[in-house]
Image (cartoon, rainbow, N blue to C red; front, side):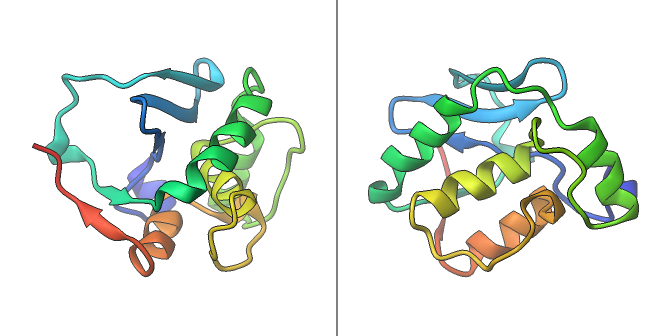
Length: 133
């Protein structure tokens, strides 16, 4: 997947203050689930999103709960950076739209053209990196 996306990162998640994670995965689609406390932090980068964005971002993820994974979008974005589905979500387009809806000042893009690596680059410019213990 890293080769096809030509990117260092291929997944992204929103970790909320109560430890719940909001994301979309290829097995269960959009969901909120408990954080894996055994996660290997060497494979992840964390960015501190200001607290005042959390409520609206979480509401957006909750409204999309249960929507399917956007397979057409993920494979289509590898070939053509255009949106191919209005019903499903990949992790990056879900997180991107949730943050935009929360009021975060991210560059304007077609959500389905935003990869996890693209979102990482956008967030790096405005948020501080966090190093968990």
